[in-house]
Every structure is written in structure tokens, then in C-alpha cells.
Length: 224
Image 1 (cartoon, one colour):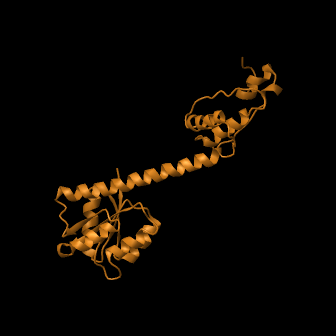
Image 2 (tube, rainbow, N blue to C red):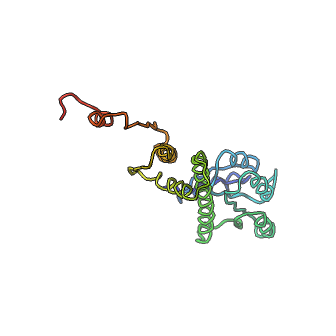
Image 3 (cartoon, rainbow, N blue to C red):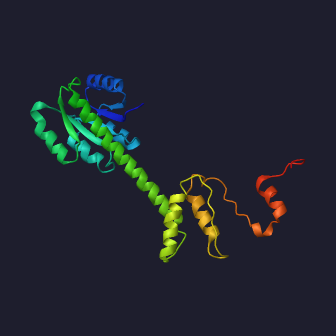
């Protein structure tokens, strides 16, 4: 099972190749870019869990890369690689929102390196899930906005509709004529996993008891 999706950005091809092999052997899906410009283009097309970028590259620094990334992506974790003598630059990068830094040459035999990568990936995955849930809640809110009411009791019913719509259970809606039973049924349908299937209201008052079973379940000649 894939642990996460990582983008490696470095202007040294041999580093990209070796890091990609090592990370893929550990179960990560890995893309590479040999410049920050290419890295930004790939980051616009794919929501990675983690970007590992060199600090010093010809076209822009790792810090500049991160600043541009954050203009359109607040989720992907960012780890910068830096030589020992430029750790202060990496610290400045962390102030801009980098998750952490790795010192070159990276020692993949060090368990702390793998722990750092895993934590960075997991942080992004949590943010992704939070974003997904937030978007789902917005959809739910939009789907029931057509029921307009200030009645506290009806507002409680709307909250109940949101909950039961997620379950695959039979729901009995009863009440006097004109209170909005069909409206509630439509809301449940729109919020349920079956929302893409037809919603078919049936006026049972116009169907005789003898025909009701055939109407709902079909009729086959010769059946009891």
C-alpha cells in the first residue's frame, strides 16, 4: 500500500535518482523535478503529501520555492535539504512554513530521517482529510438550504435529516397533509449516497390496496 506521494526537487540528477529509488523501496510514490520552476508546475497539477527540495538551486532558492508554493497550496508538507554550513537558511525557511530540514548528505540509515518524512507525510494527509470533510459539510449545507425555516423544532429536524441520510436504512416519515413530508424525503435523498439515482414520489392515496403491491414490487402472471 502506498504510504504517500512525494515530489523531489534538486538540480543534481544523481541525487534525484538515488533518493527516488530509496523512497520508492520504502513504499512511497515519488515524482522528480530538476528545478524549482518544474517543481512548481508539477505541484500545480498534483497535490503531493510532501515536497523535499534542495535549498540552493540556479533559478530560485528553496525558500523562494516555498513562498511561491504557499500562494496556491497550504497543505503539502515541505522539507528543505541544506549543507551543514547553511542550516541558518533552513531555519529561515521553517519560519516561512517549511515542516523541517535535512542536512546533506542525507543519511537514510538514520531512523530519525524516516520518522521526519513519515510525520511530514501524515500531517499533509490529515490536512487533506480535513479539507475533504469540510467540503462535504459545505455540500450538505447547500443541499438542505432549500428548506427555509426559523422554527427551532424544524431546525432540529434538518440536523436529524443530515445524520440519517448517510445510513442505508428505511425511513418512515409521517405527519398531517401539507407539513412537508415530501420535502423532507427529497432532502434525505439529496444527502444520501443514492442522490444520483431517481427520486420517485408516489401518491398512495390514489392507488387501491389491491394494486399497491403490484405498483411497488411488480406483477408476474401466475404468481400468488
